[in-house]
Length: 105
Image (cartoon, rainbow, N blue to C red; front, side, top):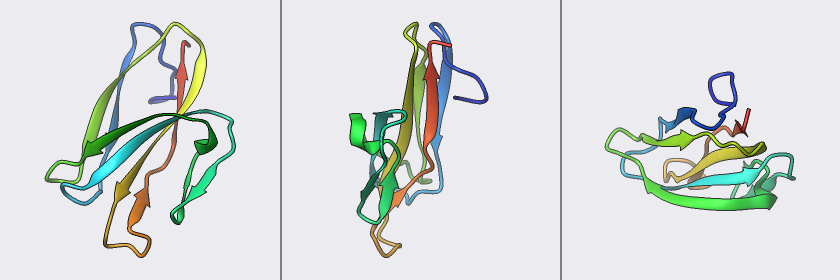
């Protein structure tokens, strides 16, 4: 669900992360929705037991990361979430909120 609606074939949306440390390494994780969550390094990867894609990234000088998401014709629900190295917190790893991506609708 991106901005209140699904992403059908031909639709486009943006995934944006902000508030992370500048130049921090992270991973954008994509999992099948409805799978059990995965508790890991002091946080929770939503639906993380079905992780299908992990894309490494580095935040910009303002602690932001963005990527374009294209819709799909196939109907599938995925969960997107970012995990970022953050030495300012006790666990050293910060988890973003998870987002439901409803593709094909």
